[in-house]
Image 1 (cartoon, rainbow, N blue to C red):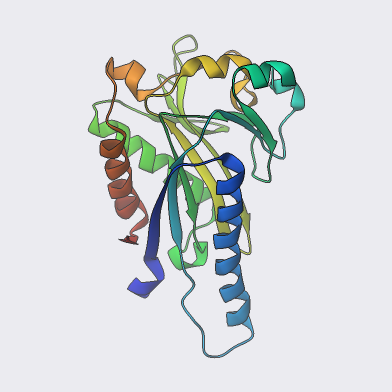
Image 2 (image 1 turned 180 degrees about the vertical axis):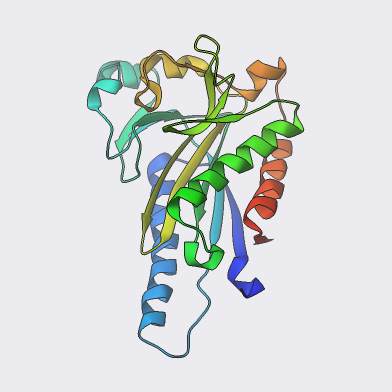
Amino acid sequence: MSTSQKITQFEDLGRINYAEAWQYQEKRFQEVVTVKESNRKSTDKATTPNFLLFCEHPHVYTLGKSGKDSHLLINEDLLKAKGAEFHRINRGGDITYHGPGQVVAYPILDLDNFRLSIKTYIHSLEEVIIMSLKHYGIDGYRSPGATGVWLDVDHAVKARKIAAIGVRTSHWVSMHGFAFNINTDLNFFDYIVPCGIQGKAVTSLEKELGRSLPMEEVKELIKEQFTTVFGMQLDN
């Protein structure tokens, strides 16, 4: 495999409206797909680009294709009162919350470049978060039958989710990604059934450690784990 295939352009979009970030994702996604489609028709094949986007969103709830409207527990008026938006989107999964103090990662990758199946890709996203948690002395786990990263997953009462994953793939290109709770206001999760799973708590790195974390510190750590887990070379 050529090293150039794993070169990934990194962009930190900062705090950005969800719809604007989604539109930007679609633009980058189409760039990758266009190159792949062109390669199928040509003997002179170009290397497809890969992108890794980080951002934070203002308060917003997003509902995936398999989600239920009933998992949003507040009406439009209360949404506005909370300063939150709601979007139905084209990723897999159910409902989740994005907001300040959360690292949202959108890898837009040609999975052929990394020789990943969709299952292995999601497993790798989980591994990025698990390894990042380990840096802070926290053990993160996968939960059978559910994507994302959990703490105390085998304890029915204590189990709590620290990161949600929801992706879309087409033409073997990924978009959307994960939301990792760092200094997140967890009260906003009270207004949804997180990821459609009843009775499970949500947590953050701040809550687990008892202190606020510098967001830039955590972002750098996550970037390092992406390079380790995916073998990617980040180009800033």
